[in-house]
Image (tube, rainbow, N blue to C red; front, top):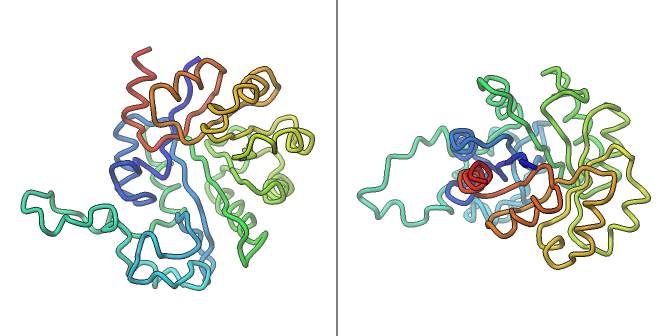
Length: 262
């Protein structure tokens, strides 16, 4: 089985995560899809950011929290230099186009995918807990409707570790594909009883590696499986062996090459 190769926060091994540059590089590498995390700003915009605060991607503003900031404030941030801390000392480093390295809105990412000459899948993770609760999913579904992407055939799936969040998505857009993420093998028996028959399941690759029994139960079950974060040939081989249909990776160029070669 040829799994779909999905770029985790873009080509994030080499380029600062969640930036337009990372996503464009992932598309150039032949990634079938793009994965992103979304958070809601204080003025109601969905932005592609993983952490609740800025301590990792903009250390000079470490104490600020995404949900308390407006989009204009985020636009002024350098969220890429943490990935290349010595770039200013490298005379041979390529010139950086700063327009490709700022905070990215989800709307812009959707536009990039919509304008691409081939179909690009989007795996969008809503982050919880958040002060805005269900407003995140409502904003997300509204935005997807603007693109006509709130149905089963849309190139979009919504992911979350929060079962409640995915229930909200299904109430708002009953046919939209959803992925129940989980990272601890003992959670699976309870989740299996809670999720819908057509829900996709998203285990971490570490759990599949460390718990072969879980891997084969998922392989033999009725749910489609998407695994994260698959970065090595060995991890990819396991995913292919158990029939994982999508692998989310920091290394889309490498993993796509491996998939195409076998």
